[in-house]
Image 1: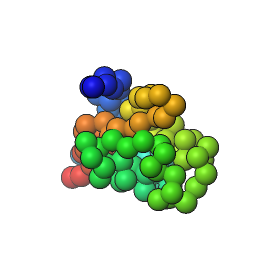
Image 2 (image 1 turned 60 degrees about the horizontal axis):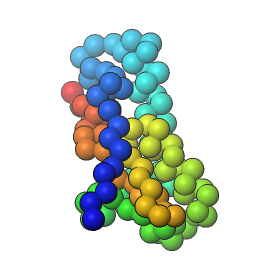
Image 3 (image 1 turned 180 degrees about the horizontal axis):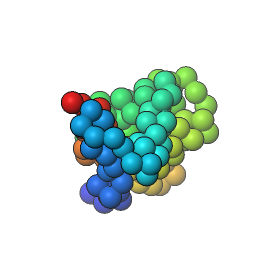
Image 4 (image 1 turned 60 degrees about the vertical axis):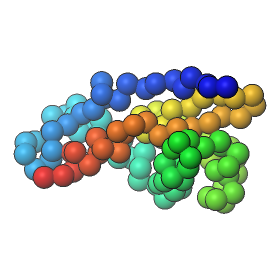
Length: 115
């Protein structure tokens, strides 16, 4: 049975022109700092990479706890930050939450940093 995932519009929050072409506005810098801060944690980077490498770029929170060696509440906290930053979407199936990589979410960071 197919489950519909919530879609997060990351284009609305896509912020900036590449850093080497023009200066960021204050709003662009604030948005980019928020997004990059979400990635500036080794546990969140690992969680994001595990989800991205999973089948269909989707994983159950129950499968993410052991690989990172953190408690379920801590993993859920990190996943919430990644979701709020627009990297993941969350869907509930029964008692478990499933997280999926937002298509193109990592590309927007690379576009800003690339020359």
